[in-house]
Image 1 (cartoon, rainbow, N blue to C red):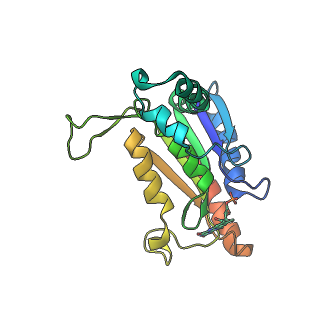
Image 2: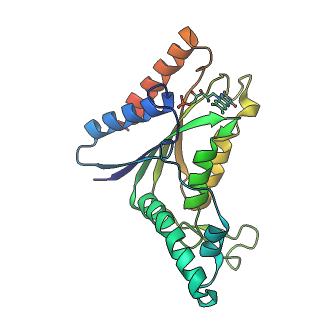
Length: 215
Ligand SMILES: Cc1cc2nc3c(=O)[nH]c(=O)nc-3n(C[C@H](O)[C@H](O)[C@H](O)COP(=O)(O)O)c2cc1C
């Protein structure tokens, strides 16, 4: 039995393709994996805060250097971050719906990443082990499914927009720094065209999802 973290980042409701696809994925996953527990987080509707000075102090100030005032500010800031990181660490499977905004992830999803990439919780700084790349992943054995929706099409390798897809390589790099390297991408393209082009992309994503939940 596994824990599934189902996360949606689109600010849109029923019109959101990524939201509909993650819902469909999770419904099918539950049928194929009876007994798995699903935790849901909606950062599209309930955004997580962007990084603040207090957040940075909380992440990087050694406890012995904290004044009582700073300690109190950090405690409040840390509560939400701890909740996000605890939830992330507790899950075995991630199903994340991510819209493409300006060729990469939305700022809301980027804020989520900034919160969970937390020193000594999800990664550690250990230059003694590897001076070339001193960031040691602390998260292991997870599986991530990213369902992204895009207005345009042709983002697959060789496509006319392939060089503009900064979402896929960015997410691969950001999550691999934490140790999450088993990542599967399902893309819905052509939202802005609608019609047959969009319908074909949705059908292809649905077929992939039906397969992915069984393997
Ligand atoms: C602010 C904004 C920026 C966007 N930037 C892009 C873009 O760079 N490339 C693209 O193909 N589509 C872009 N789109 C279209 C969205 O990716 C598309 O509507 C997608 O379906 C959104 O995901 P959702 O359906 O889950 O809400 C953008 C949409 C918005 C609102």
